[in-house]
Length: 404
Image (cartoon, rainbow, N blue to C red; front, side):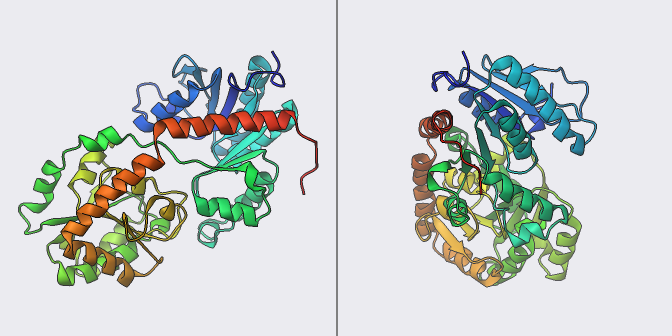
């Protein structure tokens, strides 16, 4: 059966992905990523995913489930991934009669998807997971991002569907002239049961018992400019004036760690900040359970998954007003949203929560209720299925027009 006539309930989708852990034999794949891909595969006739990796020892096909198949590019370098992914994608399109190409981003994987769309006359759905397009913070991080910004803006006008993860990204695309009916705002499922059973007592014992501390402030993320951890450290100096019992745990790693450690020393808070480093994924839940509140100081995001996780753990959040924050945090109800780069604002709201533990507890419980409603697995999977099905049906019934 050709892709033009296939029932949209029985689609064959080709994914182009950079999540190399999906094809690493013997490696621990992030549980939620693997789970999500398998659940999406259950909605389809088949889900074939081309995955970037440099590992040449991986088999040419890795079967994740009865309907999900991964194909490692085994590329010599990142630049050669583009050629390798297009070659593998072409082979799969010719062999499997693919109905839709679904790419992880609107840059390199998006360009591979666009070329496959043109070659095989099939629709293209691009994912936009971050607030990158026309974002000056992101554009100025690397010279190459200037090129990617131009490429991304060109590709999103040629995609048949765009999946975003925040309302603000949807609004940005509409302002750029993308028709609203082509944009789908779809989040990711949160495995709430892992947070419900998590025990934070051992973590609290480790970091509070012997240092005179009694409150844990938590940050989880990479130590990069994007996360603006200096603003977080400056906020901590203000928080400590009224709450010397607080300790900030920084989970993660990155090239800025030495600079951040030096800054903590210069601010005189080195004893109040713990650089925990990276921890196994299965241990993350205990850290959320252990903290009293979660802080995020980013200057841009797509939709920070840590905000979803902190809310699922029933913790109040103070986060900067970046893409996705207001989708997750109801300001003044489940946490607080503050302006970027304003340590005094961040500290003020954190102090308000520390001063009012009953309010903090109530906000955390409301945050969990909000996440349960917003990111139910059944609901999100149904929306994915609807997006894919409508993308294919609209494409098959389209009037061919040239993009502007």
